[in-house]
Length: 290
Ligand SMILES: C[S@@+](CC[C@H](N)C(=O)[O-])C[C@H]1O[C@@H](n2cnc3c(N)ncnc32)[C@H](O)[C@@H]1O
Image 1 (spheres, protein in one colour):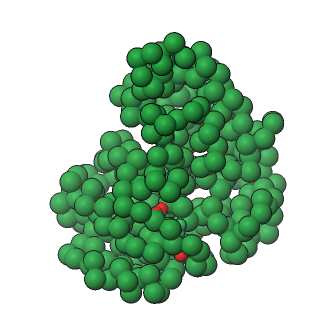
Image 2 (spheres, protein in one colour):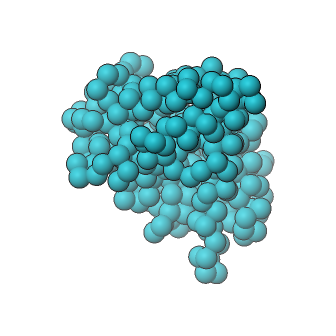
């Protein structure tokens, strides 16, 4: 399922999401009995480098973890195959996750932004339904050099959290991360939408934290996170904020409205309609900290 899109990638581009995965979700790999856990890197691109990096990073947590790099472009898979090694393989495939057993982790980075909103929502549904029990899909977008990234973490039941991550030394203000919002949110950075309110609040907190800039941008980000946490359900704490990360529950920034458009598998070139209700939409009964 899916369509071939641009294959842009670069070494170490996905270091921020990988660091977050290892720092906050390494339990995914542990405590699963004797069976080797399987991870998938979906849409690894024109070079398998970020898939190899993820494999090596996950192996620091669990020596027998296996990883399959999936790509919809058979030529890219053929080019990746020389990098095959025990535990690491490359296969042609897409959202249907054609792997031997349900993966505990699927990382899909810079893949869905080229689809329209409805197709991206359908991809979430398909990928979530393919996860192992307790598994995680991490779907996001980043800049070419990986210095700015935003990702959504999803369980088999749907979205859990959204994480904003940046190289702080080069960050003008938090709202520049709007450029990197995943497909589910990129068209929602407008008046009346929670993610727009959130980014504005983050900018205000950043402005109020300006005096901390004298101690460095890291201190300023941490101070801004503390201020933001007064009004928003900011997760984690200083340990992760110091890394230039900030995580909120999906329910805090989920689209306010979730009208449906017909799912399509075609990549989009222009903003489209809203995603189907339910998986993407704001949960009706939860508040900002739901
Ligand atoms: C921009 S590259 C991203 C490479 C790498 N993940 C990164 O972030 O650096 C996107 C890749 O996703 C692939 N792709 C697009 N849709 C796909 C699908 N449904 N299943 C598998 N791969 C897909 C494209 O062919 C392309 O190679």
